[in-house]
Amino acid sequence: MQDAIQLRETAHNSYDMPLIRAIDRRAREMGWDLDPGKAGRAAADIHQRSVDLLKNHKKLSQAWIEQVRSGAVSPEFAISNLGVDRATALDELTQLTGKLKTKAENAYEEALATYKAPTGTTEQQLLTEMRRTKIWDRLLREHAGSDDPHGSFLLNKLDNATPDEIAVILTEGPSWLASMGDRTSADAIVEKLRTLDPKINAAHRHMQAMTKLDTVNRHNIGRLTARLATLAPSYDEEPEGNELPLGYVNPTEVEL
Image 1 (cartoon, one colour):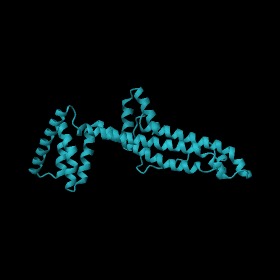
Image 2: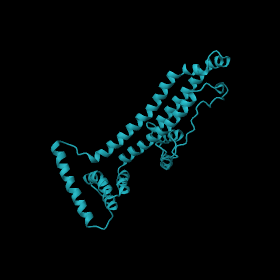
Image 3: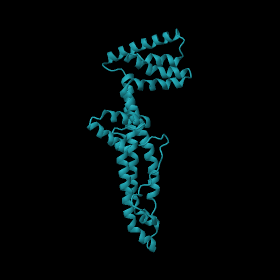
């Protein structure tokens, strides 16, 4: 994905719109988030920090290998003298993607809240709530007089809905549908809103990218932890470039 980010930046600088559209189309197919300030840059940063951590561990290990081989110290003793900084660094990497994931989740909820929460003075908020109550009552009456299934009725209303109508459908619709056992349509309301509002869609895509990054990172941290807990002879026998034992395949087949 890093190559795609760099190629898109080059295309943007040269105003190559056909290439930009082609890259964006491929990114949508793969689920990539090509914003270098988001998942792409974070993934590259984590990768480099992981490489640096392992290279440093390999270097420190060399100072102990001969002593372990000669029997001067035990492997456990050698490992214990490498562990404090390693544990701190691994914890920092774990916390990094956890914080990014939480931040993205909060940003998505805030984007949805722009529809849900009334704004303005106390009086203006009260008037908004009263207006929305009337809208919901009207929608229920319209549904009672139609043959449309509950979910289809609300989803169709979203196509030409006013901001207040969107807010009402978003806040009241899911619980109303769930009470009738229609949880699929309840989820579909938010999904459809994402297709209608680019900002909410972007916030959702960013949240997905950070969630995937956190999943991959936590798996790889487990591999790193196991690798850094060893002082094997292979450390001075490995060819250059094999320092990073990261081979996790994302279950969603989305490359980060």
